[in-house]
Amino acid sequence: MTTSPMIAFYDGHQIPQLGYGVWQVENDVTEDVVGQALAAGYRHIDTAHIYGNESGVGAALRASGLDRDDVFITSKLWNDDHGYDATLKAFDATMENLGLDVLDLFLIHFPVPSKTLRVETWKAFIELHKQGRIRSIGVSNFRVEDLEELEAATGIIPVINQIELHPYFGQQQLREYHASKAIVTESWSPLGQGGGELTDPVIADIATAHGATPAQVIIAWHLALGLVVIPKSETPERIVANFESLDLRLSATEIAAISALDKGESGRQGANPNTFS
Ligand SMILES: NC(=O)c1ccc[n+]([C@@H]2O[C@H](COP(=O)([O-])OP(=O)(O)OC[C@H]3O[C@@H](n4cnc5c(N)ncnc54)[C@H](OP(=O)(O)O)[C@@H]3O)[C@@H](O)[C@H]2O)c1
Image (tube, rainbow, N blue to C red; front, side):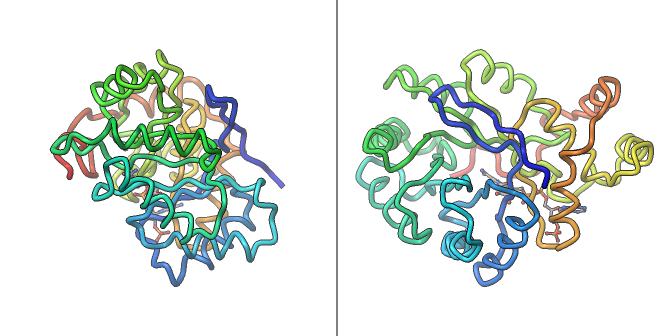
C-alpha cells in the first residue's frame, strides 16, 4: 500500500505529509469515515475540540486495530479556552474525548487578537509537552506578529502553523517566514472547500494531461511544495482518490502554473485571523 512521506519537525518528531481532515463531519459518522480513511492508507487525522467529533476519531482509531503509534492525531484548543488553567482543563477534555493518553500534536486554533492570552496559553502547551502528554506543540492561523510574540516571550517556536492555503490563496509571505524559522506549513481547506479551484481551467488541463482528477492535481501541488495537507471528504471514492494523489508527480512548469493562480487576499475563503474571535 502507498504510504505518505513524513515531514520532520525541529523537535525530532515527524508528521505524515498527507492527512485527513474532519471539520464539518458529524460525530456520528466520524467513526465510519475515519475508518475508511485509515483503510485507504491515511495515518494522520486532523480534528479539533470545536468540531465536536474527537470521540468519533478516537473510536475509529480503536476499531481500526492499528497500533496507536502508527496513527498521528492532531487536535486544537478552541478560542474560549485561552489562558493557562483553561488550556490544561480543555486539554484533559480533548484527551478524554479521544480516549488517548498522549497526543501527537496540539494546536492553538486561532490567535484571537481581541484577547491577550496567547502567551499564557502557549506556556501551558510547553508544560504539557514537558510532561510528555503532547509530543509536539504548534499553532493555527497565527500571523507573523503572533509567532514573534510566542518566541520573544518563551523562546519556544511552534513546530507547525496550520493556515488557510490553496491555489487561489497561496500565502507566499507567511510560508517564507515559516521556512526562515524551521516552522512546518500545513494547508487547511487545501481544496478551497470544494470551490472554484476544482473547476479552474488551468487545473482541469493539468488533470486531463495526467488522467487525474482536479482534486488530485491540487493535492499533488501541496505535496510538491513540501506542505502538510489535510483534505476532507465524506465521499468513499474521494477519500480513496485523494490519497492516491501521492502517486501523481507534477512538472516544475505545472507547479508554477498552479502557483500563479494565487489571488492574494481576495482568494481567502475562511475566517480571517485578524478579526476572528
Ligand atoms: N485550523 C483551522 O482553522 C481550519 C479551518 C478549516 C479547515 N481546517 C482543517 O482542514 C481540513 C480540510 O479543509 P476543509 O474541510 O475546509 O476543506 P477542503 O478539504 O478544502 O474541501 C472539502 C470539500 O471538498 C469536497 N471534496 C473533497 N474531495 C473532493 C474531490 N476529490 N472532488 C471534489 N470535491 C471534493 C468535500 O466534499 P465531500 O465531503 O462531500 O466529499 C468538501 O465539500 C478540515 O477538515 C480541517 O481538518 C482547519
